[in-house]
Image (cartoon, rainbow, N blue to C red; front, side, top):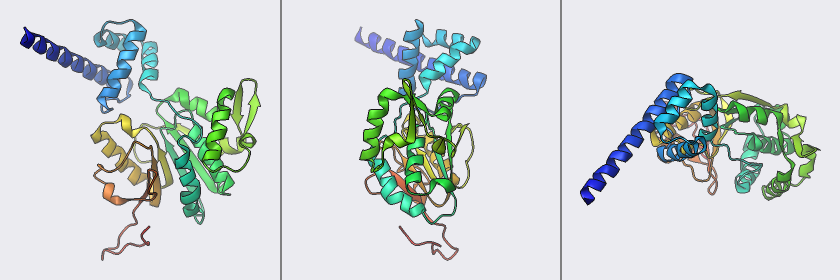
Length: 296
């Protein structure tokens, strides 16, 4: 009897895995969104929440609904996207950016910064504030990209709930900010809007890390708490994408639980900051093997 129960459980798991596979394949073929190489455990959790909210019995029913009803797909898309962020999230990282990384950029005549998977934009404006206080914002172009068009729209408007300002202010000062955080936004009813000086330096656009190509000669790339949702093969491809998108000795900033350790191109980076996940692209080497820039 126990053997029969075990066999039944394996069959159930196998069927569910097949349903997940077919659903993700269907989404890719119908709508062009590719979640097939996202970490499967994370995808399953989000699909289960979608099932419960929709009151459906199984993923086969969900697949039928989203493939025949674009509105249902948009609802599912919100569940699959991960949009968790805040101003100066993980203040230690932004203090390291302020104290160690930004001085390395000060002698570059023009700067390009890419926030990949920018979500609703809070970390984009955090970096813009740091650059402004360092006197570098006027020569910087910031690119903020995400797959989710709805959060990009929110990010481009720079409007956030006023009840989060106290938390954002504390993060700002913990990250080394010495000015008044209130100087960077205007309060309006129950919201705040980020200063136009910051918003004007940012270009927001859609970009799919899974299917789109290199973004081009960036001095700094932020991609924080995104790679953890990809499987190992996709992580490897995305890290290579970042390497190809960085300028000579450009910087890559990842989330606290992320690493390039297992990427096939990991040897082409060096750890820039001992405590935070900040990496620097190694300099090119000459045919004789000597680098054209000093080691870090």
